[in-house]
Length: 315
Image (tube, rainbow, N blue to C red; front, top):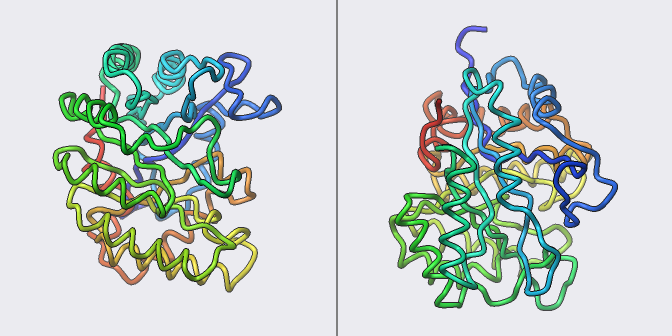
């Protein structure tokens, strides 16, 4: 189809618990491999064409004494999954490294990821989502207070040295601490996950805090925004017109705050698939929500911003 918009999907996951154990996902989670993902992405609207993507880790954080996870093995397995189609679908990898406990260990782990990814490592995500009052909003094995540790800054310095991005996953009440840290690392590309984690079912004060935190993040020119996981902000939005309208308004608000050159649409598959949201529906809404923008602006949202944040891909 002529004039298709290229798509870089900067946030998807693969796993197979029969190959690599990951108790964070639950024992019954069915495998989701590269062929499953590409089959789902074949459902893209005809106006779009996937050309590349970024796999994001599924390890989450690790507390002292928590179960051991093979983070390097995940990177190696993901690379092996995606290599066969790399000439047509180049990819990058965002891996897990604990940046706030032992800088020497973090450096060693990072070097192992670089080797396992074989030139495809583009960043690190260390999930920080933690809530003092709501255990349902504390991700498995996530430690409290990591953002305030001097060791976390040392870990970020490692990313800066290797020119790697950092995927920021935290709740709105944690953003002030994140801003205080990342203000001192202007050379690190910080990619905020999932609409900044506005949470459905909260009061207006929560939304006000979210909006304030998004403005604070956007004030840092090295911070980007993933327009992804909208169901977290409004559950079942794909089955409720009023909720969908709210999500549309939130997405457009974030585009207004950050600009198209710092926002990117992402599938978050297969997590959104588990919520009953198809690729055709999700990317159809991305097209709809961006319909009033120019061709250049839409290409930024679907492709160019992701490349700007993570770098180009290719063998």
